[in-house]
Structures are given as C-alpha cells and as structure tokens.
Image (cartoon, rainbow, N blue to C red; front, side, top):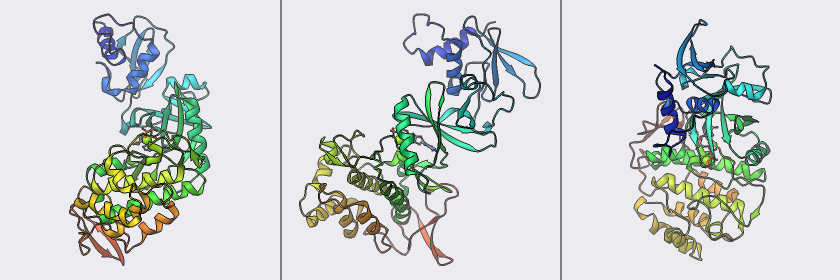
Amino acid sequence: MSFVPILFSALASSIFVHAVAVPAPQPPIKDAFQSITRTPAILPRGFQVGDLLFFENNAILRRDNDSSAHELVANYSSGVVDNPVKRVIKRADLVFPADVDLSQDADELEDYGIAKCGEKFIFVESSNIGQGGFASVSRGIDKDGKIYALKMLKDRSARDEEFRIMQLVGSHPTIVEVYEKCRFGVYYTILMELVNGEDVDKKVAVKLYQNEAVAKLAFAGILDAVDYVHSKGVAHLDIKGANVMIGAQDGVKLIDFGMATQNSQMDKIDVAGGIRSPEAESGNKANTKLNDVWEIGTLFVNMLIGSKPWSDANAANAKKIWDDRTKAQRVKSCMFEFQKYKFSEDFCGILADIFAQEGDRKALSVIKPMILNPSLKIFDDCDDSKNKKQTGAKREVKNGEMVVTSVEDLGDEWVVRAML
Ligand SMILES: Nc1ncnc2c1ncn2[C@@H]1O[C@H](COP(=O)(O)OP(=O)(O)OP(=O)(O)O)[C@@H](O)[C@H]1O
Ligand SMILES: [Mg+2]
C-alpha cells in the first residue's frame, strides 16, 4: 500500500487549510518536508520524532541508527528529488549530525537542517521554543554541543536592524547576547544566546511576583537591563512580560530588540497598545526613553497584581493616574486604583513619578534607586517577618543573607536571594 495519501492528507490539512473538498495540489517535495520537520505534531504515519529521513527515487526512506539499512517510510509520486536529508528531532535528541558534509553551500546544508551562521554551523531544532508577533524562535546546536537560540524573521531589513541594535547594546549579564546573523531557508535569522527559563508573563500567570521579595529581585534585574540599554543610547520600546525572561541560572534577561531605537524622540511608537505611554498611544511625539519608563511601570504593576493593569493606555484607569496634575493627587489616585492590592504610599509615590505626563515623568536613572531602596515596602500588608503576601512564601536569614525559601509555584531549583 502506498503511504502517499496518508502522508499527503496530513500535510495538506496543515498547509492548505481551505483545500478540503478539492484535491489539493501536491506540495513540492522540499516544502512538504519542511513542514514535517518544522511541525512534528503533524508527523504523518510512518514517521517518528527522532527519525533520520531522506529522499531517494521518489521515496522517503528512514535510515537505521547505526547501519546503512534503509526502510521505506513513504512513496512520493512526483516532485523534484535531490536527496535532501532531514532529521526529525525532539528536544532531548538535539545532537549535531556528524555525517553531513559541511563544505556544501548554505542551501544544501539547509536541507540537512543546518544553518551556516558566520563561521558556525548550527543544527536547528525542528520545533519552536517561542513565538512572537514577528518571529519564531528555535533552538540550535553547534558541533561542540553548545546550544543557541535562533530567531527567525521573514523580513531581512527588520532582522538586520534588530541585529545591529543588539550588537550596539553589546554584552551585559541581564541582556541576551547576540552572536551572528545568517539565513536559514526562507528565514533571516539571528543567532543568540539561549536563555534557559520562562518569560515573565508565564510567571505572572502563577502569581509569582505577589511575593514582595521575589518581585523586587526581578525588578532589580529589569531595571539593570533597561538602564544599561539607555546608557548605550538605545530605547527598547517593547518592555513587557513576553520580552523578559527569567531562569534559575540566568536570572533576568531582556530579549527582543525588534522595536528598539537610537532615536530619542519618535513621531510614532508602533508597539501594541496597553503597554506604551499615553503620549505614544495618542500618536503624539514621544520621548523614547521616557516611554520605556512608562512601560516598566506597567510591567511592574502587571507583575504585582497578576494581570495587565489596563488593556489599552487610553483606558480610564490609566488616565485617572497620569491625568492628575500634582504628584500628591497622583499618589492618591494610585492608592485608590490599587486599593485592593494594598500598594504602600511609598510605592505609589514612585508610580506617581512613572505614570505622569511626559514632562513630569522621571528618568530611569531617578526611578531605579527609589525602587532598589532596601527600605521600600511595596505592599502595605506585607508581613515582614515572613514576607508573606498571598503566596505561601517564606524567607529566612542564611549566612547573613535573606533567602526566599519555599515560594509556592516558584519552579524547581529556584533559590532566590532577596534584597534586604
Ligand atoms: N534567546 C532566547 N532564548 C530563549 N527563548 C527565547 C529567546 N528569544 C526569544 N525567546 C522566546 O521566543 C518568544 C518570541 O521571541 P521575540 O519576543 O524575540 O519575538 P517577536 O516576534 O519579536 O515578539 P513580539 O511579539 O514581542 O514582537 C519570546 O517571548 C521567548 O519566549
Ligand atoms: Mg517579543
């Protein structure tokens, strides 16, 4: 029995979504294979994650692990066959294929799932580890076993600009490190450090930052990162939970410089509503670094209350705070707005300097020490002796340092050093 119909219908359902009744045109063999390797979830019958597959005489064959024996997986009745080999892999199997001739040109290497990035050869994992509005991100491995992240964009100039800005910002412990740019098939790619961890949005979802000490620790990393970016003459413009990653070993890492700019003023800041400043939201000229300060405020509130504080920056809630003329009025509005969460007056004092009209908004260099001030208490009802706030977090002194222990939902090996 031929496997073609099975293979084809599985592929067709994912590639040609509207071709249900009419027999869909057969995809060129390379495209078909691209979908197999990129979307293991739709692997047709006969294929398994981990298979090393290749085409020969219009058939898809599978090679046994340690022999040259071939097993027929599927027949292909048409298509140009140029013997591409693809490895269908799962995370645990991320191993550079030793059997590929690396002197081939980049397009041929792509058939083997290998990207040539500068002098590096990177075997790219078939599944994504992240998906944004503009790009997907996959893991890759080099011949020495070092693992990377590859951000794949369709737009070459967007990729070039993001890479340029990342290089300009350079290396910093709280910023994802960039290595090379390259092309992988149809994608313009940025090769960068793989951040082990999760983005902040995922941790917000488990209310991690309702623990004051954990929140402060994360804030410190975020403030460090953005402050450093500003010191390089760059504004990030897209500071939000999905663009900040936190991991047990890596700590905080700011990612996604897709919107970042060297301009200090912009006529239009084209990021999603709900995070950008009201002046940007209303389409007015905006100071880019002060826009970042507003976004940091929004992110911090989001982390503390466990949900987005306002769905778009014109929402009455946001306006209530920043429309108030005097700082005292803004502090009052903040206390009222976040009453349910018991934000302290001191913390609202800082938010009043952030959620202010552009002319009254303080620069990050002023905000940062206020938030890092060890005596700042974010929540009024934080029980200092246990640092308890809605989660079951406890902290204790170990070797003279305050350490947060047993934080609910904190994740596996997290030991968080809280600031005193
Ligand atoms: N270096 C990395 N290491 C690990 N995961 C990453 C890395 N870079 C990105 N990711 C993951 O991929 C997701 C998408 O990446 P990124 O934010 O750069 O894409 P984007 O399309 O520009 O996003 P946006 O929709 O915010 O514009 C991130 O939210 C994150 O979960
Ligand atoms: Mg992003």
